[in-house]
Amino acid sequence: MSFYKFNKNDVFYNRLKTYPEVNFVIHAGRIYYKNQRSAADGKVAINSNTTSGHINLYEINVNRSSNLVYPFLPKNSDLSSFKTVATTTVNKNDWGQDITGSYPLQATISRERITGDRDLAGDNHPRKRIVALRNTLDYNIPLSKHYSYISSTETSDNSWDKSSQEINLLTIPSIFYGSAIKKGSVSLKYYVSGSVIGELRDENKNGELIQIGPAGSEGSGSVAGVALYDQGFMLLTGTWALESAYNDSYDGTSETPSWLNYGCINDSVVSSSYSMDFKGTNYIPVMTMMAHAPKGELNFSNNPTYIESGSADSTANKVGFSEDSKRKIKNIVSSSYEGHNERFEKQTYISKVGIYDKNRNLIAVAKLANPIKKTENRDFTIKMKLDF
View 1 (cartoon, one colour):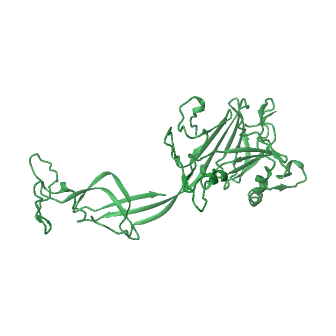
View 2 (cartoon, one colour; view 1 turned 135 degrees about the vertical axis):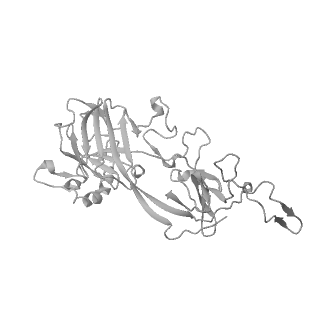
């Protein structure tokens, strides 16, 4: 086996910046992620162990019906446990007994309509989420005045205080977008009976979610909210009616469609549905390695078939083991003529490249799609890329 050391010009590090597309559709109280099927709709689900509209962290237990993978750790003196396991349950376990969790871990988008001092789900302190975003909102004021937590002007239409303003808060976990949501990629569409009655876009790439359609509709051209691209939040504050001739049961009350009702995940919603499209920003570290096969080298093999059949005479006794030093190597050089043997030439076929650490421990193996023929007058450079 031959070992070669990577030189400083043989290993390169770089980073790819990608923009994966993400799509959500909310209809009839159910969320759909990238148009994936749902078993609840009477169809064969793509992943039977992942809830519709969710993403499965690490893709564990995909379509398993039994022998599910689960995390565990033994109870010991450090009292380590899982957040999902109650302290009382841990206390009841015997020392050394396994504390178990469950997979898959899932994530999806969420929506909260916050009005007054509480949200419509009955949370008495929903404003803590808005208050927690105050510094982030004010930090982005140079991009747009609509980020202001408190805005006071002479006209009431341009004044607001997010400590009391009615807000529709959309939350997107970072597993869907990576480092940040790409600016200008957000599109929020509001449907009634399959027809678009409103669409928001960040046309100026400054975080303002502007209603761009339908053309001439109520609120067209107005700012209906802002997006926090680095944190994965969207705050919708548009109160105007998108379709004054229609009412639906949002959050338990009958109202006209507005951006405050966007994303309502409720079985009682009859004809309203919503779509959310955006692009994430994902950085992929890449290591590129150049493995060289020089001329005149790597033309011998330890494979037994490399030796001519019957020529590998050997002797073994109590003193040691020896082989004939004049063993013949099999000639595998092909001829273009029938019945003619070409002149012998040492050649091998390279099919794998092993990568070792400084202690010669094998840490990776790169397999070639097709073995390459290595002759003594040929040199090759094999390019390997590893994404992290």
